[in-house]
Length: 450
Image 1 (cartoon, rainbow, N blue to C red):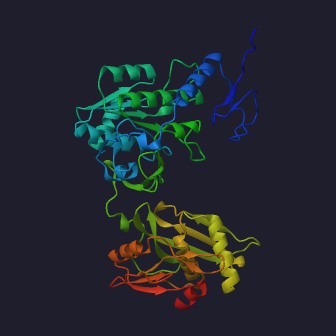
Image 2 (image 1 turned 90 degrees about the horizontal axis):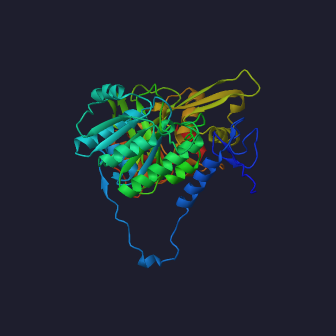
Image 3 (image 1 turned 135 degrees about the vertical axis):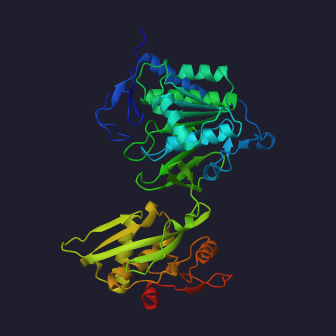
């Protein structure tokens, strides 16, 4: 008699093991391994065989015919920008984000836009009833004849509806609530999520239906479920932003049909999420100058955004001073403070330093280094910086100010917002009339300028 194959799977991340483990070696979760049934193991084999299927014979790349990608607009400029120009027919898009950030609101609004444009849309919700969705749809102004609602969690019932009527777009809210009768696992488990995502992907490719699925995220900020989900789908988008603030960022982490460098910026209002208008003025103020405030220009995708950096330096009553950064990398802040202590003999080992990026945005590039240092020194010396001055530049460990990419585009944005002075690493080749540029090569020159 053949020996029965035993397989255990972590319900937190999908890691598989031939024996039961108390702690998952992949994600570190405790008591999450469960034994898979023979039926579940066979389903996993079937999924793997379909995913790994390829052509038997290799073809010269010069003989391969290009796939024609057809796009259509979602009715929202920001979402079209992140998707690479619009929705691709037959694509599978996964949208993640923390609870209350606006995932369902955005997709319901997009569904209304598509239905208004004549696209037949099916909105499937396993969390809300059709009546609840209708109330929200009326508030968003998304109630149109071509938008169909379905409150269902069984995958076979959804496929029956898709087979009966020819839909062009399918929206699933959320993937963790659906249930496939092929598996005995509970809805939301790793096996169910993986099986359902694969079936939706296969259906969308075969019938050229654009599919959007909403995924819950873990406390670490990643999509709940196995990492294979992000490999199966065509596009992965993450919503960022505090639910208590009006601004939201939609950032692409994977896109087979476009760039992942673009970021969509939305604004929450009483009518739902809308494209943020005049975003340039959302992250800085033009009031009276105050100590500890400096302004810089960062690039979010292809667009420059002016951001205010705030710093607070206060005497520490402890042997180990505090370092805190909101929206900025803490390790880089520690490096800049060590540089100031070494190069400028500033005693920051006796002071607490706090950094905040206004507007709830997170800075991931190094072009804000010069503004961070300017804000820290301004707070330390209690000397305000003019609101008409902008700081752009990367600071190295040896104290040099390095050039950044798209400098001219950043300066044009600063000039359009009526800034008068720019502290930069080097003078641009094309000067901007009305904007005085000062080039500094070392951090010590910044002290002299201030």
